Image 1: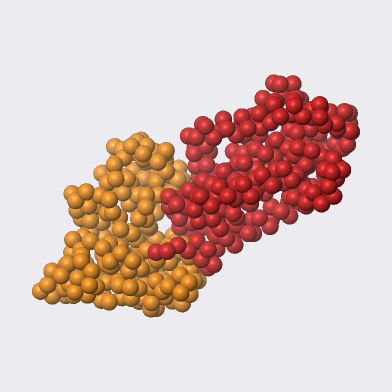
Image 2 (image 1 turned 135 degrees about the vertical axis):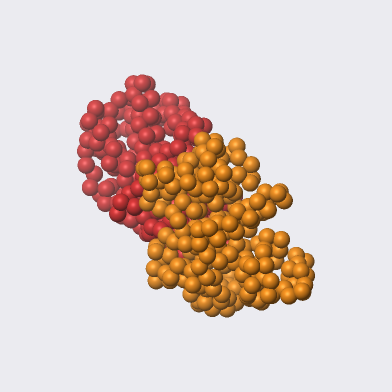
Length: 263
Length: 238
């Protein structure tokens, strides 16, 4: 057990060190949601009327509405980016090295996931801090209550990235997956507009959004930011996390030879 | 036997990469896995390092069956991959500590071993340098030091001298031979370069996925030179 924890700490630390060495990545991760918040939302606020719906108790501005969605966006991009680094890693051989460690693969993959999730969470807090400086504030307790929601959402999206990385052999293919996974997941969710608003324009789109696990991760974050509990969002997010993790473990199972390459 | 491979076969779809490969390497023996490019050496290494396991055959590392007791087997295995697997942005020491932790070593115990491993490969004074700043030979030495940190009983090296200049190549080859006789570690060294093999070494000659010959280099080649013998057996120039 001690061995497993030492290894986990080292894997998390390595992710952190790598992140520190990639300052551009941090800036990009911060600038992206800020552009949405300060440019896109400002333009949209006039076009979109939002009525009061839980967890909000008063009328809110559009900027306030999209903050949880942008937190989700950071987790989403980071989850995919760390799996991008996994594909890169595997090509460079360090994934192979990791997998020669005398520990179960599930544990090694989970440790890797934990490392990337912790980094995602730090970025979300950096974003919330900047949002606060621009006067988009939340209940003080919300900043604390959101932590478990961010952790679960981060694990879910990281596990999805991990699962995808086991099926992708080359970096070029990965760009396609980014387009076919990130954009649909983000736009077909409650990140930018509430689901009832979506239902007004199309029932089918609404149903797709309601089934999208990203929607539930965002709603979990939204409610947690206002110190409220959303049971359904939690169950969906937790189930999706378990499913994606199982898929990742399956993808990296040596007996399946998914990692088989021409020798 | 420290390393035993029995009746191992593997294919990628319809293309057979290994076909009934069997050989064993004794304790403290240096064995050269010799074969032209495409002989199946890399596939064999992928199976030995458990990157994938499927299909018939068995592998035993230091007495542990790789399928039945994978973790015990991996704990006794040190690997140097063909491509570099160092984290270029981290220092030599950080790279080694990371790997030590993967094997459950931390704190002073890890530091002591890292110092010893680096000293053995004359890399002690480079511990604080970033891997990116090292030349090819030093990167390789760092990787070998890393592979030895957890005192493995079996050390696998997959064409470790690729891309190195002749003197560095010779020094590295000599070093691993010394290591074998000094520490009793069993070495499987994959290569297609015959000048890396001594007469006292075991040679496993792999060609088109099959073992063509297995024995002492000196006995196998007889009066011919090893390159001549290699060319005669495989039809490929050494």
